[in-house]
Length: 377
Image 1 (cartoon, rainbow, N blue to C red):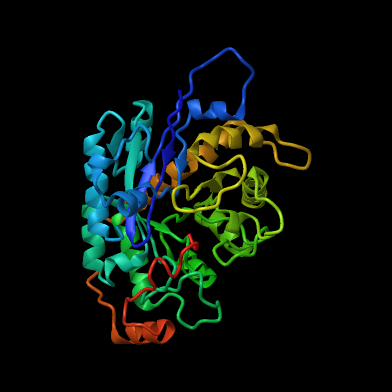
Image 2 (image 1 turned 120 degrees about the horizontal axis):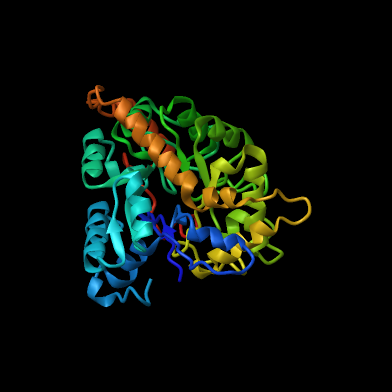
């Protein structure tokens, strides 16, 4: 019997689903997937709530959770909480790191809310704090376009915008609140900037390695080294366009294995995780088409073929979810150490908005539509 954990997110909204896997003990040779009996499997990005919004208009009565898998943040939060309440025997809403392990041991999907795109806070730290009150525990600073205070990955790294003074304050306030900072989707320079100022470990909820596939959504080597120093984690995306830049050949599980092994070789097994982007992308590798193939990935890594790193059981448990749990715990420790720090009352200034308009060619805080950025997950 398997149960897995998945962190989900959707554009300008929220979501983080955690799925814990549990496999019965048996008297057979150990396989890599057997670690899922000892550690929850946490997927940094799974877009189930977005699909529920897009296809069913948040109508939970039209969803059969046994068979089926807003672009408005409040609607998304409401939908996730209603979904958890509708299936209490299968789902559990979590806001703390220790809730994840408890939910997994109870064979439930631990559902944690995250927001994909800083646009959702409307350039207001007050709104950021209210999202925390509603249970949001990680925020991706941008999606597929700039916020008025941070560059997205689609911009040229020569941009003078990067992370503004207000953007720095957003990161600082997230650290104070105990909200994980997610650097997937931001520009390479914003990655570097945030890593130089954050007081807590960061995550990349669904990003792969730039060295193997030089897509702007992926993480360059110097940033990977900074992630190690920061004690953060990079959760590898499965989207074909991000793991295989050679479009003349089929994308397979081997491409994902290559990205995971590359990160492990460069910065160690403590800083890599899973961020599939299932239900958010339309192309997935052969043998990793959906969540049922997670065990196959762990079995393949445990094989450790010639020239590949050796994955121990402890290493695979870290990959499965313990690395993300460690980061979440560390973020909470930083939050606790900052209890005496007062909430920030900084507001975004006209200079930031002026720069944003020049970079976007749009009104302050505006963003291209989802259809215009289709495929850029």
